[in-house]
Image 1 (tube, helix red, strand yellow):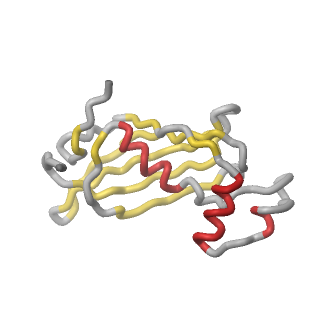
Image 2 (cartoon, rainbow, N blue to C red):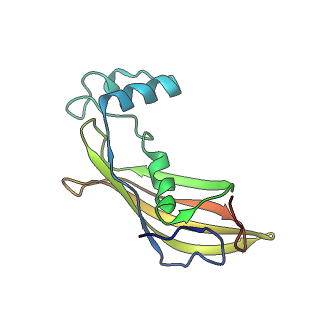
Amino acid sequence: MIEFKTISYDLVQVGEEFKSDDFLIKPEDVETFAFAVDDHHPWYFDRSPYGGPIAHPVLLANQALMMRHSRYIIPAGLHAKMQMEFVEPLRAGMRVRSYGKVIDKLEKRGRYYMVTEFETKDEESGTVLVRGQFTQMLFKGERHVA
């Protein structure tokens, strides 16, 4: 059984690894996302230069951020920066998972941050679909969440 502790700068360690839950991309996910961001490009619903319909590249952006939730309680914080490289198109029917590692912790102007790099892969083939890193502001010490 996993014990969930509240994430903090003091608790997180450089080199710590995370893994998201798997996610099956369903056609309705593609449609819902297109509606939410008001982007109805035909590639998402018909043919594309990639051999059939694809999903919006940032459909799974939050999955990488959610990796930390598999181990920690994440209270309010500031999402400071995120960069992503879209390597291969996402498609309905793919079962995907994000893998990440804390690569840095830093203090800047009295605020504390962690930097995590990640890859999101197709679970069936192991193909990397998205890679990148994000910087998240953290509280310094342990805080209790009710």
